[in-house]
Length: 457
Image 1 (cartoon, helix red, strand yellow):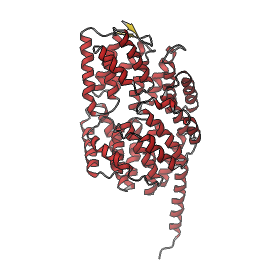
Image 2 (cartoon, helix red, strand yellow):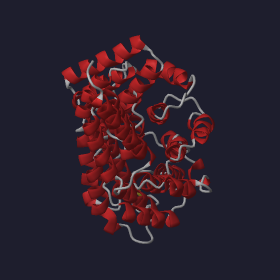
Image 3 (spheres, helix red, strand yellow):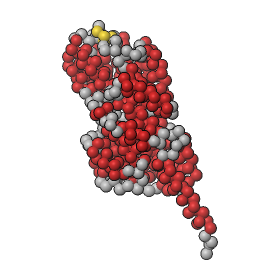
Image 4 (cartoon, rainbow, N blue to C red):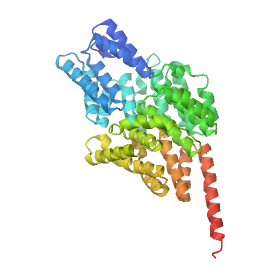
């Protein structure tokens, strides 16, 4: 039994495999592009390493792609075979159980298994980060914060995962509205682990949620090396910078970042599609002509209509299909979502029904310029949109579409109320979007008042 770099027991036998496993964990914590390469070395050397197989399975499932489920199932089978042969520790058994639950669509149960590991060893940084990642997909912001704060006392100044833990804590603080503390904790964590792109991006979230776009740009500018090593998460950090330029009305800068960084590589990863579709949607709401940029996103999303792994992903595929006017694919995606909601076989199916179906109907209606139907459906979905997963910043595209639909349909009071709630979440500060929409509401009311004063002929 060998201990890893964090002092956790493993069933690895060779020093070489242990070194690669340590590299795997460090890369995973930093969202490093080299994570699968390191893990591949581990499993090539010791394919019966149950924990490595369990991690592989969960890494694949977190990618939210239906075609990767067989790979995750193979990893589960390899892990369970290793367990039968005795090549497993009690700690590793917990990770295998988490993978089994996740493969079978029981994501909350997977989190519960990881939390059981953390109760026994609160300093288990791998369990901490995986619990955090799955809860994020589930939109469980308060659960993320509670999980992190339960284990913080186990991370002393010499723990190599301390900086990454603080990055996770900072993100949970931001997502639960404690912006000042979030920024402080993130900066402290980055002083320890400067390659923690998650912590760095938590500060970007703070600037977004406090309507300080200039401060956010200043924060990210000059720190590009802190996320250059990342997997596709690097596109997401660039997306944050583009949002800040958008808030300042700097549309040329937004378009440049879109073309040179955010869609530099034309991947079909749902996170990359969500970056792109939500940014193009925001641009169009601001009256910007985005050219033919919807086309490649729609082409890719046409192949994802039967996926159904995550409601968050489906809604962004739908945005792409609407933007690219792919009506047959829109119908196919909507039909599959309705079937999933009716089947209600796994945890994600419940989310297909609420908020998924109402949100999808609202987006489709918006694309057809039926703003009354769009508003009524999006406003209904809004009540449970947190459950779709992602962050406040990511889900804000649906908030904007709801507000714009309301204004265009003449629901001015309702749109104003949603704007007020949105601003309240942003420390009471109006961002560029809110200011522009309040002006539109005022203009709408003035126009309505003038119409009322016109005498009937």
